[in-house]
Length: 246
Image (cartoon, rainbow, N blue to C red; front, side, top):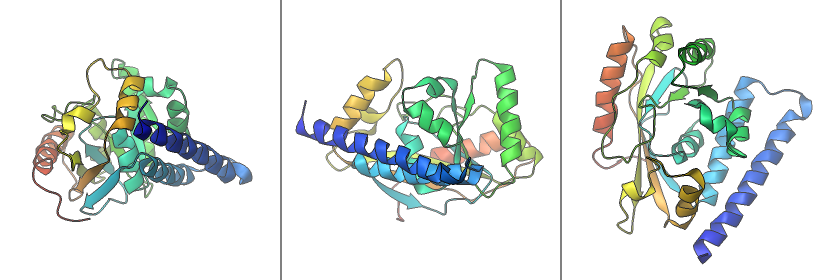
């Protein structure tokens, strides 16, 4: 075990403990509201980001509501985006059963979808519709899976529908991993059949990097196919070129 892995593993363990203690301190006065869950998730993301030695740069203004659609490189994107704003996530159903991380996702108000089940998609769409009036954005990864970053996969359209029906703004966002030592982004992406723990071990040993987050302009779309197509073009464009604001 390298010194870097050992040091970060200890820091991560401490960060996760702090997050649990913070959650239960929030619970002293009773069950948390959705707004409190989003705030806790925001603080938890920032704590974990720091423990992993990840820096971040943000271009554009984080939205204060509506739907946010982003490319997806790994589970680290959830931590990175949570640290940048209060928000809710839509995540694949398998995450709900992950040790610790599934528990914290539920604590933070994450909505879980089984993409092979139409009834699950309908249920999550209804949950999104119920939360859209809140001043807290809902983050969706419409590619449906994480990738190696070489391209942005086509966007599934179904979960755009609640925002379209509510005339709620949809904001394109992009995430990119940038390394100072020449490491390529693909080396930290989590895709294919790689297990969670092997990837986490690799992430702990990766030299510090900067997560670049870009937010587009919130827009209202007339239908879900237009929303998916136009945000896909926007996310793809934001993935290229340097981040110019922090």
